[in-house]
Amino acid sequence: MDPQEETRKAPAVETIPCRLCEGGVMRRAAIKPYNVNVGIALVVVGVLCLFAGVLSLIGLIMLLTGGYLIIAKKDVWLCDRCSAMVERL
Ligand SMILES: [Zn+2]
Image (tube, rainbow, N blue to C red; front, side, top):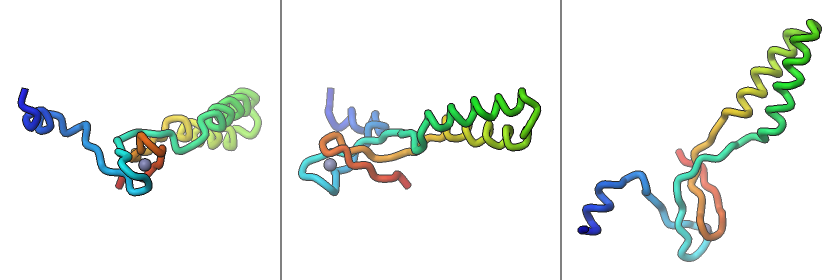
């Protein structure tokens, strides 16, 4: 197959050269910007507060914050050579 046609068909595998190392290639990646374990802990404590019937407002806030920490994602460029990470704008 014609290699030029191949690149036109697959714009999703777009890469950029790494600025921090020689010859590295940065690829699109999605990372978790927050600590998922902290999010899970917040959800657990939040649910416990809700079930206990005390601090229910604080429990709800913890639940929502924890849920956000768990599902939040950040789009970045990730270098496959030096593991440098650049935020995708
Ligand atoms: Zn690099």
